Image 1 (tube, helix red, strand yellow):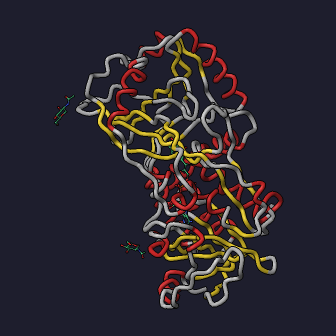
Image 2 (cartoon, helix red, strand yellow):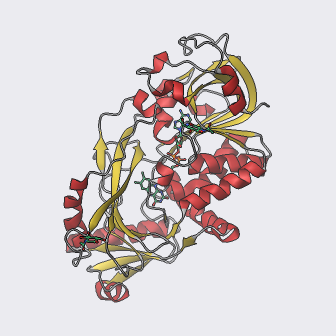
Image 3 (cartoon, protein in one colour):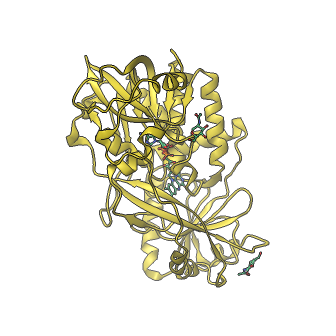
Length: 424
Ligand SMILES: Cc1cc2nc3c(=O)[nH]c(=O)nc-3n(C[C@H](O)[C@H](O)[C@H](O)COP(=O)(O)OP(=O)(O)OC[C@H]3O[C@@H](n4cnc5c(N)ncnc54)[C@H](O)[C@@H]3O)c2cc1C
Ligand SMILES: *[C@@H]1O[C@H](CO)[C@@H](O)[C@H](O)[C@H]1NC(C)=O
Ligand SMILES: *[C@@H]1O[C@H](CO)[C@@H](O)[C@H](O)[C@H]1NC(C)=O
């Protein structure tokens, strides 16, 4: 198969044809066969590509709209390896988190990925929070999370002298990881086994022709400044046997551009930004372990995370974004600026468990956006992984709502997606 990079260069010379490819076949557009295409080079897309080529000997092409890998949620998160406590038993989140964590620690050890199993304390600071902690303990036990233990406040505070709490739940399997190194390593293996990564290439839609999916791909530059998806025109059409839609924040808007899909099963998407603030001017980090409050609606609460360099940050909060239309989402027009004012809400929340936090010690760090399947107050939603049986297109798997714990789960998701596609 010709490399897509070359093809894009080649077809760029074909005069641009504005056509509505979702209703007509794309005649005149260069067509190329392919084996497997993964859409999106985030940690999940990369892990899926690696799994397909390494363990199933498939030929994989990863199409990424940005100019490099991992620029989406995969580089805008807490970099925490989660235990698997919070999620309803038997949900995909619970299963993938526990299995993914075990696979991830093993992988990190084997491949020298910087990580540390530092453990985590979930803390109750008011009496009314203690039952919630007990609930989390039971749930974690049901999910098979190892080593969970309830601690008295005084014991937790002895472990972490800056901490203030009434009780704490200790999770020894939680840890931190350098996600950039992880992605590099997974990519390296994938490339060694024949996977090609094609950047600056946006999948703009698809149609089904003779029971085969035709994937429309355009140079990212040429879709950048167009207002409406209907004006977008492909530079090339790929005809792969298997397609994995791992487009993160854009996975749902993209699936809506797949002509022939059962629209009824495409969920609504919501976006929730989370900002981080870092602790400035510290010589010694105030904490040795991850410290989490009781979870809030939409997120796990403004928590303490440490990175492998000893930096301390707080976040992410939850800010629902109401104004992202599908075409902006497909063009990656996300606003990741951290609004300095949000720090005002951080101080009181953090001081509930870290009372000696100094005024003016929080510096804006970065933000990420969660691809959510539920809106404010809607409660728990699981990951959605759809195959033909649900959306009707042969050879396609859609990954929707891959928010936290998606990083922890990436290798378990990859296993599951490959098995689903190849029916093992
Ligand atoms: C604030 C925050 C904190 C988090 N904290 C944690 C944590 O501590 N632990 C944990 O386990 N998980 C955490 N997560 C979740 C984790 O970061 C994500 O689940 C994971 O990174 C998702 O990876 P992905 O590959 O699915 O998506 P992404 O990393 O977003 O990758 C999707 C890729 O698809 C590309 N793309 C989009 N549309 C197209 C298109 N049309 N054509 C081609 N390419 C396209 C994008 O450019 C992007 O590179 C957190 C998430 C957030 C937002
Ligand atoms: C992608 O596009 C950017 C900017 O448009 C450019 O600098 C970069 O070289 C391109 N990368 C590839 C692999 O073509
Ligand atoms: C932190 O240090 C910077 C200079 O490195 C200084 O400008 C700032 O005032 C300090 N902040 C606090 C809270 O001490």
